[in-house]
Image (cartoon, rainbow, N blue to C red; front, side, top):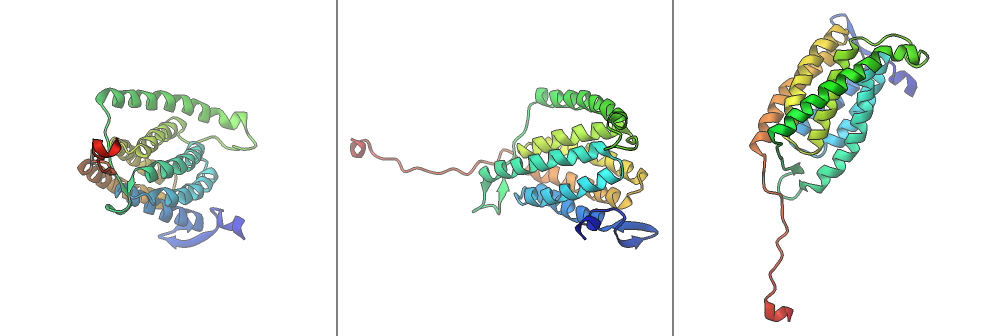
Length: 232
């Protein structure tokens, strides 16, 4: 049944005593494909990523990472918007569905750092108490609510900046991936931890690739100039 597929108890295979569910496996595959495509500036990152975040949303709910679950809802929404925005900036004929890259001034970077920390702490306080307010939906306390929430707001910012084709998004992804590796390993989901280690490597590649393609001229349509005597 379809409901069995979305359960973490539906095991695909066993690796060194760790049971990997079909949900974790499929979510890992789709999300890995999405970040590789993002690093290569390929618009297909968005539809592939949408599938991946749906799968990870079900996974994180079942292992009590509620902030990460909420993060997947955001990824879904920005995935649809990002798909639309990148489609408007894609040079499909000359560069294989790839987009051009831009950067931000230092003042904007500092603003984003402050917003990430303040909103992360605020969200963490909510997540730390959500099991008290909504016990039916969240029966157990969240683990690492502040840290988990700061990684969530970091991911929100990184996703938004990626949607806007900003090079700085990769700095945030690198920070997020470092934290996520330790967090998911501690939560005994090593397959996801390994995935984020691969994400980390890919983030460095994405930063390098985007840096080398920043401020690439946008494709333009050249209009033929009409002589004044013809216009008249």
